[in-house]
Length: 67
Image (tube, rainbow, N blue to C red; front, side, top):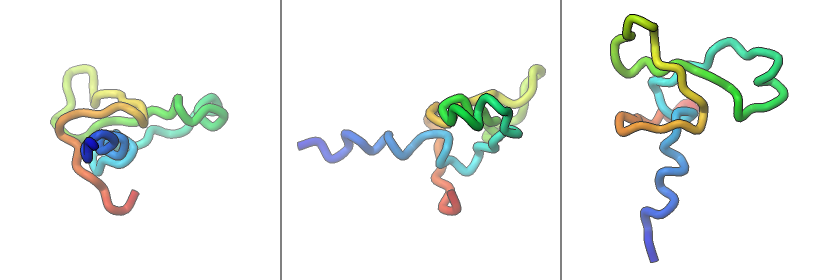
């Protein structure tokens, strides 16, 4: 039995304290999987903050207890 098998299911951008949802467009209101946000973990690059989906993940995830 693997105790860590589904641990990454909760370590997605949608639960991270560095993730900020962009203003919802009409498309994302109909399809929640298309909701975009910005990762504010590191300083922005020349093209701005990285764009992420709710289901993306990275090694810098930090759980936001308010989400």
